[in-house]
Amino acid sequence: MQEPQKQNKPRSKRHQPRGLTILYEDDHILVVDKVSGLLTMSNAKERDRTAYFALNNYVRKGNTKSRKRIYIVHRLDRDTSGVLVFAKSEPHKRFLQDKWSGFSKKYYAVIHGVMEQKEGILSSYLAENVVHRMYAVDDPKKGKLARTGYKVMRESKRYSLVEIDLLTGRKNQIRVHFADAGCPVVGDKVYGDKDKGVKRLTLHAGTMTILHPQTKEQVTFEAPLPVFFNSLLNR
Image 1 (cartoon, rainbow, N blue to C red):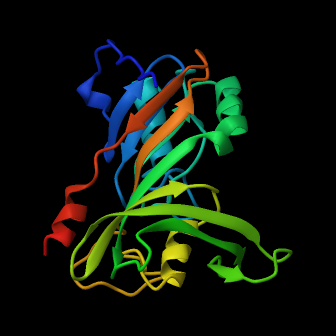
Image 2: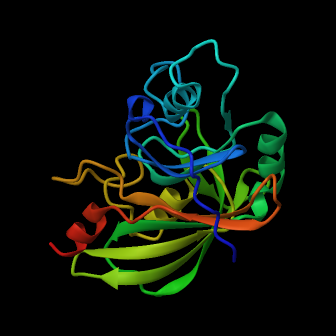
């Protein structure tokens, strides 16, 4: 597997985007490590404090008239941290999105309790209700197939660290699957319980392997596991 070469362009600290660590950048793509709590793109309540807004400002170096811009390829939930890929042209965005389902995506999560099976695949059909909450259904005609591969990496008395292969890309599927398995993701206020002293969702997009849209070579990007994940396990 070929790793991307690091860029040699000097970066201006003045326009460094807050809440985002640049993992890789060239003339075709921009890859960052997003913090938990930051939206990928704007919604009805938040327009400016997003990864998209900050990175557009970064590539334009503060010049609103600049023709440079980035294109959203995929999203991470506000509370999920980790690898986020943007394209720098419409054709490269389309290329990445057309190939997206075939790319390898590994996530990491701290979950409550311990899994009886230390490795396996969680599978169900997921549907969405009127308040945009996902839930499992038995009828495949009423939901979309979601498959989540997992492997337990560490365990403590209260928590487990799991490595996750995202085999399908359904909304909130990781959170729903582990909640349905009786081991919700720590810090999940929607599908789990409120955790005293936990201020973030412990779900992290750790590695992403894609085809570079220009060179068509396989490249892998990695965002380090948040320190908080290990501190939870060490409690």
